[in-house]
Image (cartoon, rainbow, N blue to C red; front, side):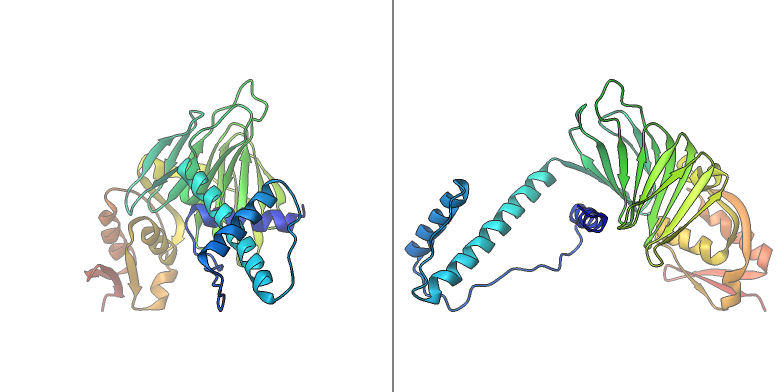
Length: 307
């Protein structure tokens, strides 16, 4: 199978799990005059032939039968697909956090995941010793992965909509928002499979890889992991971040909208750490540091320069 096909298939599965809309809609059969008895008889014949792997003879006396056969095949394929999709969803565990909420989750192998605010995690409820461990993430989470001992398949893979993170036993953070994915490695080793071509990128502790789905390019650099993972300890750390970047984090985690009355305000940079449950303490700091007036109007934070 080509890498393009694997990539597109992975994205379709990601969309299925997180409930994205599909381009394929219901099909219609028009201008058919078959009786209910004929439809039932032909459907049973077709299903029986498919089960026995036999060729179904079709008489081309008129177009009525050929139209029906095409429709019946389509119906069988769609019905089968829906059945297996529903069966798969029935065995899927899914966790979701709201704005300002974090949650700790234990996986079937005793790995621990701390799910950040406004995020969704899904995984199959039953894991065995022969299967690869897989989870699907939309949002942000910190992973502490246990080693899978005495097993044939020890792989642990985190899927986002644009890359896979493959590990054996390690601690790392994955953020997947706005068609961008950032992976920060605290300890151990991970391998990323990026994009539809599944380009392999190896990471060492203290590295961050940031991938943009829009440009289909990535950047790897050295960082201090604690600055990117402090949220799991109920702290928000901003390191020389622009006010626009700070606003984006608060929007993602708390649903707070910001309005900058002057575009230059958003370019100011700020470094601080604040408790994630008391983000209001941030606003007086910004007012004092940049001579601003910050007000809350209708649920929106408005930043303007003082006269």
